[in-house]
Length: 243
Image (tube, rainbow, N blue to C red; front, top):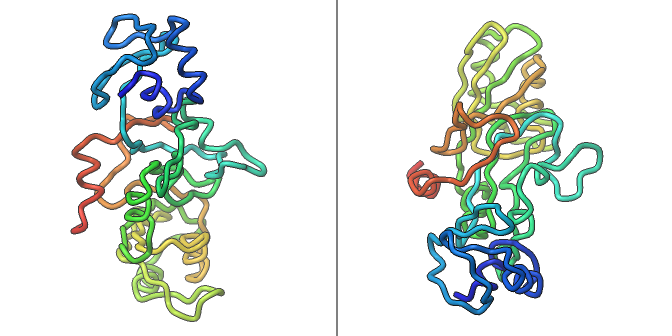
């Protein structure tokens, strides 16, 4: 692939900008300067730097982000900063192509909810992880205002009725993890679902954290606001339809 096309595909700007970056001497490839925008390189696994910042080629972006409180999962936030501001510019600017959008969050978390968020520009992967038909489990750590009792746990497992749907909504798993704490597993994605389910059993969420999506768990060493690429093993686990 030509070097200018590699930079364009990775989100370093329009092709004319990428051409200028190369011709201006701002790009090194595997540690060596390159000023030829038409130079061909095997793209997969290629390591290069742009204006001194290292980068590795990825045909598609598969990312995890530790969402902090006080951020919206929106490209056009209304009251809080966007989670996309936590990503470097090339990831925010990766071009869309056909069924593949630019990098976007797979599902959303409320501004006051923290935890694991996946992002990608692979349309098929986004559908696989977000479609209700695939029932991908999501695990939430819930801090409740009032004491959690066995009755509430049984109700959440049996199903509660929310105000916008007469059909009961059930937790796939639910256990008390402390006097005011629950671990709740859901396979649906309704609006404010955890908060509304807790309200339906007579309690209230005071803090909410997503710790797992499918087989992917938020690493303890990824700080709030931090992001990283999924490893090959994590991507294979996320794509495993047997989860």
